[in-house]
Length: 274
Length: 315
Image (cartoon, rainbow over all chains, first blue to last red):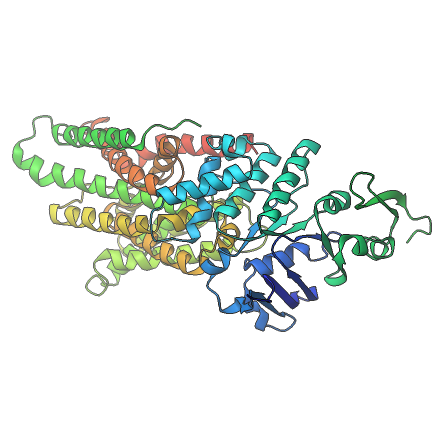
């Protein structure tokens, strides 16, 4: 029995050139959590996820302005091979695209490559894992279609399936819900909820605050690389915090008639012209 | 997306290769060739064409994954020209004994050009097309330096330069051809044995990192293996373009992009394609021979345009 969190991110700072992209950001994730990562453009959301997922190399943490500790069940991530890290944490890109013909099923199969790169793949157990992941993400029926013939929402389902096939229990979804109609948003939301109840932990980057508050239980608010708020969605998504994030906007927070989740109404630019 | 069974595609490739091989022995510049001519000239030549075709196609498929760019291949990226330049300079300096014949210095040339391309590819805001343009320019530079070197070192050197620039399989000797085939098969097996790392690179380096691939290590390995393949091909047969582009694209239409099936298909069809192209080069303008690079470019350049424009049409 462990009391260590599934994922712990402590004091992550990141500097790119002369710009401090992240400034001491910390959060913890438990199984079943859905955390919304919110903030204006350039606030460091993607950088945070990429740093934790190892796409931005962790060894840069030894450089000035870059530091932080990332622990998976208490184990320091800097000492973990990229292959093992990928079997815990997966970064789901905003859009899954290939310049080459690739069916949805083949794209998901790529997720299993991290486990056995020296084999040529396609074994029964891998095929079963791919099928299970695609069924979980409601995209098994798309398996024979080429990636570029799918709609943005369908591709997103395939991308999530790929990270599940990768074996990861922690999923970082970067703008997963943007460019998608309501039906697809609802479908992805359903998939995310069922994954969370299966014990997956999910971080959701979103620009649409209302969509994020619909699915997420907690939120981390970033502005210019600094942590503005972290906590349950009801206490984080307040008018006071949002004014720090979006100082130029007139905003009002009310509760959803369906779920009671905080919903943000946009009232145009603020008259005081800030 | 319906795909045929890869087995049929492999079998068809094998049959095409065998047929081209047999025709290559039967037809040539001389109409009534005797057995001696066939054994001394045509068999080694057809074997070398098979080895080089196999090698250039495999290198093309590898480079396309490595740069996540479907328009890459040894010739258009200028790497072949780096290898040829290396070979010419190496032989002029008398380094054959030191560096395993021309192949060693060709390898150094190929590696140097590949290094420049990687520096360019990792600069910010370099698109697929600008990387390709950089490669084409690098190719021009290498070819011009090669022609200049040969013209300066020997009054008739410019004739020799043409052989390098347009490709030539006529220097094939049996022992060399057999060695080329064997080393190609070995290198191909090395790349194939870790084909999933190539698969993971199909959606770019960042994506491969997210999938847990140690991209730095994989990249170094693939650069060395593909430079070696290109060096062996170019030092034996000069610069032959577009085989590395046409064959992988053709094969992907039948077996898809995953390298477990793609690489063997590309190897078989590459051998068949260059054997066939060389047959055409020898027979089409009989009794004169066309450089084989002329034939491959006649087919390859339009295919290149087609791939590029089709890519644009479906953003």
